[in-house]
Image (cartoon, rainbow, N blue to C red; front, side):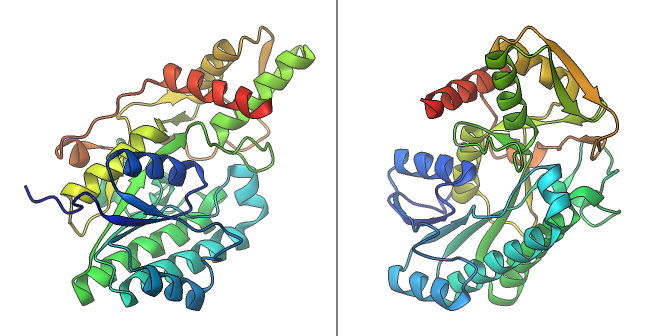
Length: 312
């Protein structure tokens, strides 16, 4: 099979300081590629003209679009305009800029939240746009769907070798642990850590604890991204997950054990649960030879260690 990303290639990772971008950067460097980066203060990816100019000047062989405005239920519910508009601007800017600069290869990273709220489980790629979205993150999901459509449009109209991947819930060492905007897993790590430090009697977790979620360590995602860049050139988005899920209740218990907190877990049923279940069918990417390797307890333990190091 022809390698679609021969080493060494020049790769611009948009969003290299984020959870996903940092992991993808590490993986690309380990594979011998030259990674190009720009911080947010150096280049606002929402600026179409500036982004296009940067890409024309640097002429990367490949772009990995990992930059995005992301957050948990609270952040999505509070700032739907920013989640919709910022992500639309970033995507239009980077993808159109890559095409105008003659970039040969591009990987757009979407999210499993693009799928209908009640999609059949495990979710296949064909479920896209077959039902209503989860209302608590609709703005973000619509933006990601638009990015996927933009990639497909460039493939169909211009023959661009651009592809999309739909990762499940991600976590890892560079995660966002801010309680106002964090996703569920890093938020739990911080809550249990702070409860342990303050010797609190209990930790409150939003919702009933019954929704099921799938969690992929970001280093496994980075490995999957390299597999896709090297081996995949199809029109359809590709799911990236682990193929199994856990309840939020079970997740909280795992985090509690890793952190070493001995108090109670209190589920607040007045808060939203979000989508009841979101498990991805990963048969397409496993057919390419990729499989995840980091178990959830192992990954959470490593993430907690990184959190502790960052606090020092």
